[in-house]
Length: 245
Length: 245
DNA sequence: AGGCGCTTGTGAAGACGTGCACAAATCGCG
DNA sequence: CGCGATTTGTGCACGTCTTCACAAGCGCCT
Image (cartoon, rainbow over the protein chains, first blue to last red):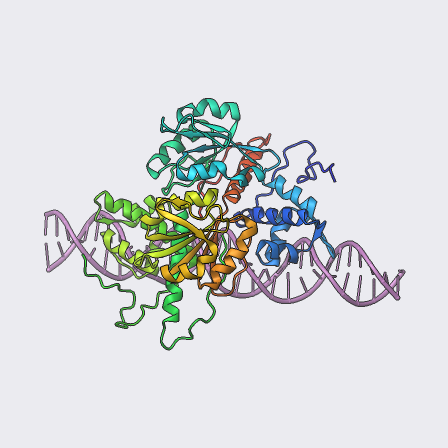
């Protein structure tokens, strides 16, 4: 149970495993499977069926099986999936076997919360630097880390080998920060600022906008309200259920 | 410019407008268009072409036109879209003409940040209640609101006519809170807890998991690294660019 | 009034994602 | 050893989303 040598490329020994290029939708679900698997492992399960795991992850079981099949079929027919092995596989594919260093830029309202969020550490990430452009915030200590000025980024990026940047600044500052991150070699950015970032090819940007999620919910509220208010309509018939990410 | 009577259903006067049921993907993009439009309005633009707006929103222009066409074509050929009119239309469709009351449950690390996030108010939402199950947190004042105990939810929900619930509790408490929200009639939930919520039909749940976003980025980092390390490979060819939500 | 350039709205085709339904494979038991 | 119960992995069909390409429409200029 401890000697797995990171499979993935059964053919070439020693060489780079050459990750299968998974469908984007599958990649987006893998972390959810991983979380569910950790829960199962903690409660003592050694194996789990696609039915069981899909329920824990909130998806269709056929979808789960297809997703897992993309990364190479580590299940046993008639039995299910080995929880520990599957965890290892998914963590490998997601690149979580190495603990990645994250730089968090913008220590305002949201930045504070992110800096203190323990979900990052527990999923294999290490907040290696807190940065801000505001001199009055530099020096503050949050969760054992001291806030440094964003202009120190070039030095810090090398020292800590920053792989991922998180932008939690106001929208007006976000593009400048993104440019600075790109300049020091960061190729993955998680953007919480409500704006579109322009980055060179090869840099991945993911955006999280809290207000957008609410607006989407608002639409469905509005729609549900207009349906139930319909005079001759079958009020409260089947509306949508849970929505995917 | 002030007398628009909320179109949407040209046929029936007075009746409920009967929202066109937009594709989910379109709904998810409307808030982004709306943000870009507000920016344009603030900088004095009266009209905007699909090309210009799509650039500001970070999408393909054809996609933008198709999205907008779904809600009824408010553009003028040869000219573009009237910014003010389009804002009004999108806000109507998203149900933002009424300021919706939001209850935020869980005033921990993340909850604090959400309570102070001004992006909610500026997009038409009002945080009407802060709730927590921990008695030691009850009574604390955050941003002008006093934290109350989650058991007061039934009363507060009626008083404030809560439409949307935001869960920012630990995973272990999330399902219980969701049940409580559903019990008082909330039909839209935004869940920040890393777990799957089970809700009755007709209740919409959207999930935001900060760690999942990082894991997706990690996958692409891993993939990019394995590509550039390939010996005979065309290193650093076209990788993906920005990724949609 | 007429023509020209610009922009929207949309048909059609292709890419992508989903879910059913079933064959293949494995285990346990008699 | 064979059989049945169980569960994976996947071919196929369907629906959704994206993108191209272009006709239809609009305003401006002469």
